[in-house]
Amino acid sequence: MTELPTAIIGGGPVGLAAAAHLLERGERSILFEAGERVGASVLDWGHVRMFSPWEFNVDAASVRLLEREGWKMPPAEELPTGAEWVERYLQPLAETPAMRDVIRTGTRVLHISRHNLDKVKDTEREKSPVQLHIVDGDGRETLIEARAVIDASGTWREPNPLGANGLPALGETNLRGRLVYGIPDVLGSERERYADRRVMVVGSGHSAINVLLDLIQLRYENPATEIIWVMRGDNLRKVYGGGVDDALPARGQLGLRIRDAVEAGALEIVAPFAVREVKEMDDGLCVRGVMDGEMQGYYADEVIVCTGARPDLAMLRELRLELDPAVEAARRLAPLIDPNLHSCGTVRPHGEPELRQPEPDFYIVGMKSYGRAPTFLAATGYEQVRSVAAALCGDWEAARNVRLNLPETGVCVTDYAVDELCCSPAEATQPALLAIDAIAVAGADAVLAPAQPQRCC
Image (cartoon, rainbow, N blue to C red; front, side, top):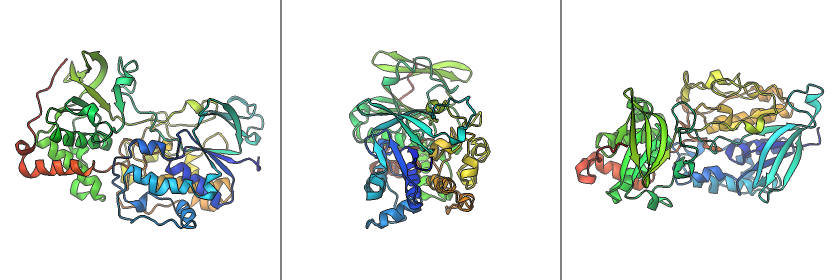
């Protein structure tokens, strides 16, 4: 067992930080990233600017490793985009000589179990190596053995469905290819898809707001574009957030700008609306649900789903886990992050004790450790893996000594996270900000015609 490496699943910021901490302690590790390069999921939203600055987006052990190779820290107060996070930090980290020997890209972990033991078997379980069933880009399958596993695979690839009950809406599974999940590059590579079309955005978090601000800019340039914003709730004050009182100014500005856009009539709002069904209609889609106690439907050419994400637990089926039945996080961690009780600023630091599972030497870290809770911090993930690495190396004093140096209100992700979207997107691109500024200063009529009446179906 002592000769085997620790396996890390996920080549995002938290997975790479886990490898850096283990390297610093002289521990062998092997990291599996399903994408063709590290930070592959981050690059899916690479056009979006984060609202937390560089100082909260880097890990201490990773920085020490990088600085030995001559890397220079970006300005601490600067807000990077997702692409900049990868290009200026994650990719240079992956290219250091020590990390190059650890990382295997284009490799997906399908299942995890114990050597010759299924979930039911007790005999010498803690003495048996962990087995990872992996597949590479050419379809070759292999069994890899490890002494421990750190699952930092995130939640980005498991978006929540449209259905208000947590299940796919009727028709959603068959129409999945017609829907877009996440934060599409509305002003860049996806412009032609959305320009001069009627676009529905479903969701109320910062991911949805980023998409809406981009669409408003698109409408400024292509006036035939129509925007409809669908939400389950109708508490817009909560959606707008802390505004000028927010400890992170960029996060506060995001809420202020969408508030100004709503007040200027730049988009339609349908809320509270509980989606039940989606079906094809002519060249577009009809989204049906309950509002004011009645079934109603709204037509759109395109539908963008920004309803959050959840952990993929299928590959962990043969491991002994103790997860909270609601949040789907480790049972000891769940009460600290339950979104019914906590927001970003009230989640206290935590580490190995809270992440421990009944399965020996197996840990879920990063965004995936939060299950369905949406308040994850990048710095939280870095502190998690520092604590776990210390425990795996027998340094229990360091494992128990957890702390975070963050603003009093925290730096959080409100709905998407990424393998890990560990710091939430900030404003959309600069042109979108200028468009909203113009609305606020000159009035809606000077910039955009009022939003078109709702089209029911």
